[in-house]
Amino acid sequence: MKPSNQSALMTGAKGVVTCLKIEGITKVFCVPGESYLPVLDEIYEEPSIDLISARHEGGASFMAEGYAKASGKPGVVMATRGVGAANLSIGVHTAYQDSTPMVVFLGQVDSKFLGREGFQEVDLVQFFKPITKWAVEINQADRVPELIQRAFRIAQTGRPGPVVVSLPEDMLRTKKNMQFGPPVMKPKPAPSPKETEAFMEYLQQSKKPLIIAGGGVKHAGAEEKLLAFAEKNKLPVLSAFRRQDVFPNDHPLYVGHLGLGTNPRVLETVRQADVIMAFGTRLSEVTTQDYSIISPAQTLVHIDITPSVLGKSFAPDLGIVADLKEALHSLLQQQETNPGWVDWIRERRQCYEAATHMQLDNSTTITNNQVITCMQELLPANTVITNDAGNFAGWLHSYYQFKYKQTYVGPTSGAMGYGMPAALGVKLACPEKTVVSLSGDGGFMMTIQELETAVRYHIPIISIVFNNQMYGTIRMHQEIHFPRRVSGTDLGSVQFSQIAKSVEADGFFVNSIKDFKYVLSKAVKNDRPTVIEVPMDQNQISAKRSIEDLRKH
Image 1: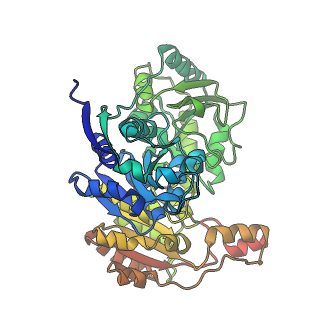
Image 2: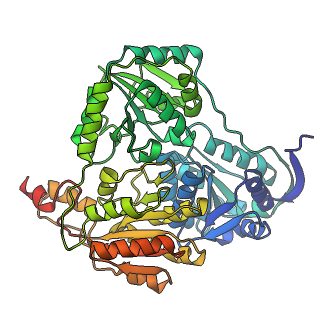
């Protein structure tokens, strides 16, 4: 028998935990539920697995998603039946849109009650099917190894994503002989010589080539290969939506980030390009500005590990199915190009630098510009930044320079409540790094209860909360389409720093940049969860425009 194979008589619950051990899972996030108590009991007996019990299933799923992004391992999260599953679904949707490997275990009603609308019963497979790579219910205990190991394989291979596994109560208690296979080995396909040759031909014929680099580069751990390929051929690089750390932002070849509210001068770089090389990006709605900035007149070369991504948004002139690290390794073996586009790159880099130049005022009250500047100056080089959804993130995306790989974790799904729980997952994956989350008051309030989780498990993150007492992004759109008709977007006064103190975290309210500098410097050195609450001017609705400006236009 091969050493990796195992066979034993055990319960379905023991089989679940055995699969986790085989895959090297050391962190499991959950809100406990009676429907999967046997699994919790087996984890109690397993010293290699840490169980992180959250205050809300949505928070637990965000933690698992952030952990997966930062660790490169699948995030594992558990919840109970229909009610817990519904709460958890926001993290599943985030993992689906962000291409994050996640395996979700959901307790289910007893098999003999299925289809009779038992207590908290939901058809979990049908519920999650549209937002997962695969959803399955295990009705026979002896199939636990087969189906769970398949779940881990599907979650991690091709374009990564979430898989949901439904676990009926009675199955978890049933003993069966189980046969286990080896852990997942992720395929790493390389382009064929013919494809590599075709790629280089397009590049040689180009006058204004451009790389758009996305999450596939990060999943493959190919950041260094991308840097080497870009430097060898003098190629400009744009990062896809919320993938800014894929390439050093201070490098002369970096020409911007394609996100929300991207500066027109950065968008012009895409429009001027004659050959666009899309590396590991699905060319999403946000990255392509409502699918508008890539035209049929341009040549598109698209490399992705999943065939279905190619042609999903734009038909490529050359589509290559490959792991990005393997693809870039193959391309690096080719003869370097003789670029005639050096002046164009210099021009586009200057446009990017002009777009990201931040005017600092001497205001006595604190501003978003001042906060981002202080973060850039005071945070350690390998600090990981997470962010919630909201207009406050516009300052981060426009002005903060991500100079090192694996220093940014953000939701391309745009989920509110993401920032702080994701930071907890990141910190658990990277305990040696400083982890800072940015949130608005609207999003932070949605998962604020996870501050207690941070305290209970001694997870020292720094949470910066921009408080303008409104749902800022929606107010901006409201003022654009219905000026002065404020409806539903005002929020009340919440003292986030005091709430932090009430759960024994550190909490600070700062209204001057001097105080912010002092508190941030102190928080970096402290080994405690910290909330820094920053009051913000309601009129400054975005990084580019004020409410007054919107109403005038």
